[in-house]
Length: 638
Image (tube, rainbow, N blue to C red; front, side):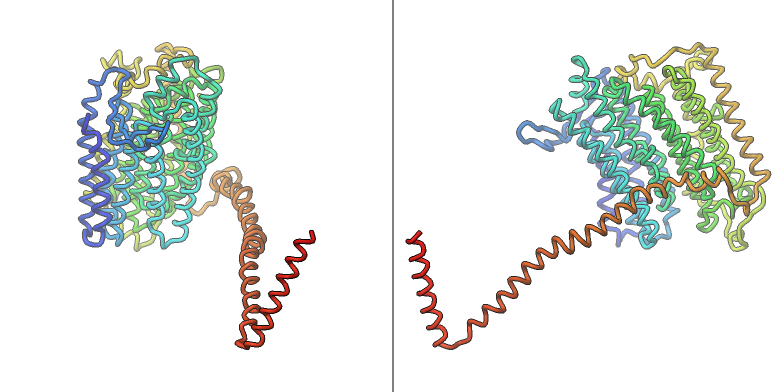
């Protein structure tokens, strides 16, 4: 376990080498950066195999050095390895390595390739620090690091003004959420005088919990998660993040940044479990996010935008699981989502590469005959995210919806609305598949001649991710199926030592096997119905037809960006311009410049006294003496 420091160390070294040597390394920077992530993956695998030997509830904490040690504040720079962090290490480094490999070919002709890979390595380093930190402050350093790297990567092609604005939007909206995280940390430290996970869990569990205090802290932390994991109302930055290169979209949306909020809430389960009000808020926000993003995704025509809103919707499902205390289910969906969403994003990058940079699905069609590997793997990703058994998305999404169904008085209502989002998921994904790959080609003749399958460095990661999307769900076989198959819910057993406290808390009624099978059957039928809806949409598809009515509303993203622009952005700009004119220029600048002008004016007048005439100097001397006498007489009189 003492090797844990090597996991973030390799990407950090990769960042320094590729960053400092960017002008000399050329295309070899991609291989150096990829090898750094591969080394981290190997060490993560070793740690993963050793985690089972850790005693229950006793994570291994590796102290590196004293970070803050002043007075009553002692915060070490320590790393913590347990079942939860080891799983995220595997996902981050494994998926990250595949994305790095893919990027070698995808970014091979970009003049800033070495800089791009240095940013990717720094991104992975920050994410690894986030999940390995043994206290909230170290987690927050990684939290801010991925925020910085997302800004650099989203705006990587900075010569395009729209891309730089998208990067700035992501940075600012994440800062809003990060403020909540900071306030939560301040509250925790003020009460318990520590930010260490193990110490906090022991302190909170040792006495009668202060529910109102824990609710306040949990809600503050959830505000942070809302920004980083793109929940309502701080979700609009994530679709705009598509401005970055496609591998960046895969890295941000699949395995790293957006799952940070899920990890943070899961790591803080000992607080959230004791704050039912906060959990109810998380459930409602998660459901709203899943539904709103799904409706928007049904009407998007940019291949990456469809996947972006799909990510937001799937994150909503994860937070629904967190809201009912189903932490294992949420983490399970993080893992399966990393597989099929990385596959779908990299598949979209392959399509864009084959189409010469085109992203509008209305100008595609008939690509399956030209890009067979991309089509087959993309098809597998669509089946997985739609929730068709036995692919990975079926098991993880089904487990979430089971917990939601049994999660209290309104569980069945939440389940119904969640299944509506699941129906739309199957619909918009197969709408995307059919319109992109089926039918007749609708692009230009130049694009038709350019069509080709992507090189092996891009297709091999697609094949690996497709295999993981097929078999990844078997780590979470539900009991009703596991008994007949001789398999168990391996993920549940693996995470039980870490989440034992929360797993002991009942979150609703227990379903019989018959009810479980019935809900599985309904979920499968709903997914099939969504696929059929996508097929019938494609059969009547007209690329020139414009949306109208409610569909126009969804296509314009509920006009949420326009709402924010009118309610927040424009008033702030108006206030800023007024303050610039009257407070800054007329007030502060006027005062400072006025003093300067007054001194200058006085100096210009007083310098006239220095005229070089001796008689005038004698006259002024006499006048000064007389003035001193007058002052002395006046002073003695009174």
